[in-house]
Length: 85
Image (cartoon, rainbow, N blue to C red; front, top):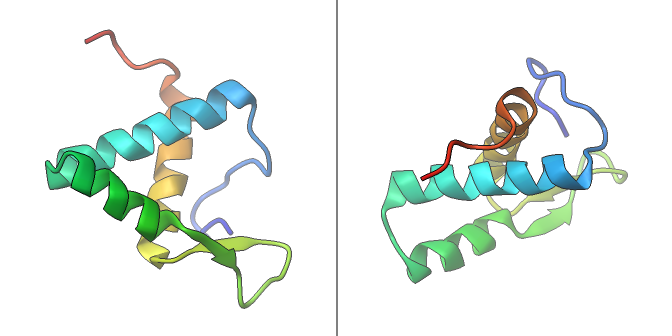
């Protein structure tokens, strides 16, 4: 479910979805500086659940992470591949 101020496509290519996932995890790791523990928490926060307001959509266990996902999708669509490290 996109937040009202974001215009995101209903579907992504395999490449764009991969990049969005990368940007989401990168953003999370920069914020929390945890290693394996951080990834475990990220997966718990992102756990998909039925959206209680719309049964055709999903929600994340922690609603903040759905917005983080939208930010990652926007970045993937806007920037494409990240610079080499």
